[in-house]
Length: 630
Image (cartoon, rainbow, N blue to C red; front, side):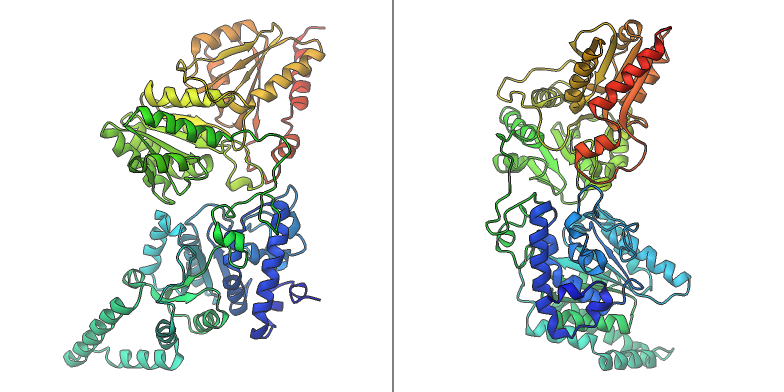
């Protein structure tokens, strides 16, 4: 039996002798690679954090002690060690465990996460709550260096540094190699400042000098000055020291002895806010992931031996992200004022080629969505044409900047919203099912959604060169139906729905990527003797009142279809518009429910939510029968 098979909870890990930990780490890595190759998932970050995760659970008494993970994409080893090894083959699968920490999934998950930069603020809340309730457990926040580019992380640090609460921030630095600072001198200094005798003596001397004596106050100030000067010279984390956190590191995140020394010291002698700088390597232990950590950050199914991603048998179509990226390069060649902005997602949003073709006009601002939007507003004021490419669920974080910094003055900023609608295995923190609803409240905004790749290109061309004010284009994750992408750009008339199929009995108004399902609904209705029209809405906002007035007057029943929550969505807008006219048709709205949707394959989720073409056609037929007098 392997060591891993004996570890069911962290208490089992803590019962192991320290010399058994490297072997267990190797077994966890093998288990991770074997399972993620079958399901896909966040591999590189989790491989890099194996020893760190083990050291934390080895030194802290979880679940009594609380570990808060940032984002959670590095927490796979945490799941394995906390009672979910048996369920790990189901990770990110419908009905299986989540790819991120969830408080409803395990008592070891102290905070539900999925977005970046939240861990310090959340952990501080847990720590202050502990203090107010008179409890004594430890609280640890684990945050990657990428997440430290988010402003929320520094807001949390600022608040933490001004408090006196005992809390540990572990900075998992996985982008730089082990530098010269992680050497004998650094280890010596770290061990020196964590030595119990050293700290007890320092506290004793400090307390003895703390009185009204001018001489003692002078000595105290001299000691402080020398201490600050030395730390500026030899501690890489002086920034954190100045913010009020005691800094330890940098420490090799693959060395158990060094991490256990520090974490044990902090567990036994809590001393206010502390930051421990751990240096790890993404993809550690798997050569393919070490060489290309970006590829294996979030990877699909792959062959473990070769690292090759497993692809379907059909000829792959370009993703919407790739189509957008290609169109941006084409537009950029003819417009020197076009600039592109993303928040740590040049690859995911399709802007990699633009970044290399026009490096002076590409800006990756890091995990700082709010800054990205306000930065774009400033560019727009200088006459440039900023395009902000961001995932739908991440744009939520910049709503205030969209409203106040862009829309208030009607600035022309184009937002290309990737991953709109259901995204599948990453679940509720990544589904883009709210953007129409929250953007509907933005005055003067235009919201477009293409039914295929060609419409995406044309909408981008129109938004950049033929519109004003804030413009939003939303499109789903993955591939489109295969519309041509090599044709000349065509301008899309503002607020211009398009009648695709005629029919007298009912009208199906489809928004964006729901068009293919709408066409299938029409075919199913035809089999039941119902001849329905199909309309490509194209715009969620503004709605063309003249067009819809005619539709309301012509059809007794109208069905709207959208890949967005029904609450405040496209269908709700159509319903609201219909109430202003005399003609009152029966309107059925099909979309996502007013709740968080779980993770799982999109087709499975649609079936679960009653949103398959079969489900929709049956409801339309049933409603038509109710409208027909006996």
